Image 1: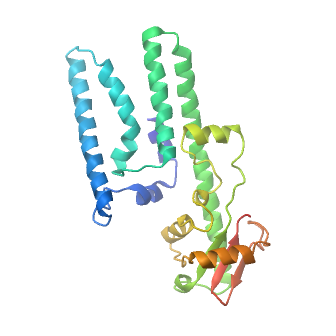
Image 2: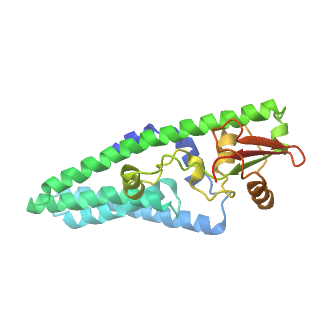
Image 3: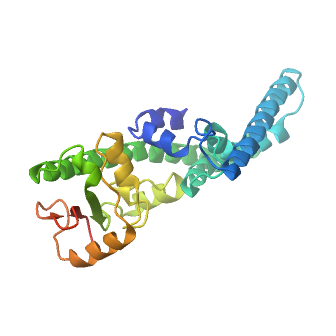
Length: 265
């Protein structure tokens, strides 16, 4: 319930669905992804059957400790089952593991009492980190919106408007790393999802990420994704530009019809 409520606070829900949801993309994905989705579907059916069996045995007064442990461990794959995706990001597994680990400790506490306070402490810490992650994710979203508006405003100043955007290259140099330091952020990085940065654009390596372009496209701005050679050349030529949000961090190269945005070194 904590994770569900937390997810409702994150504005990136639609973006995540477009990125991971295989159930709605089966007609367009390749053969291996389809096979993977079928495997995940079989796991989901087995998991649901195990849930029903556990409920029936509980109602009959039978012991269900072993079944509960299997369900608990199987819950690590709930992301895969919900999205139909054979491969989830490692941070997703870390996030689920924090809950599973707290659940296992709780089961020990229920039997032996000696881990009772540790169980409660772990659960509270997981909840706090989860909700603080939501706030960080929303801050990342807000920063990305500001960056998008600044890029569009710069394009407008240079008379680059729709549909000219489609013919205009957009190069982001570097990534915004400020705000990703400190022990609390590192704890979130390990135990929750790793989404503790100041922007969603920096998950992928610089000069190869498509996240900024996907984000802009979702908001109606379809800039051209430049090839790797143009990106690498721009990174060298404009390395001396000041870092964003300095108003001189953006420039326009008329010869190649390229907007350069210097985020960091």
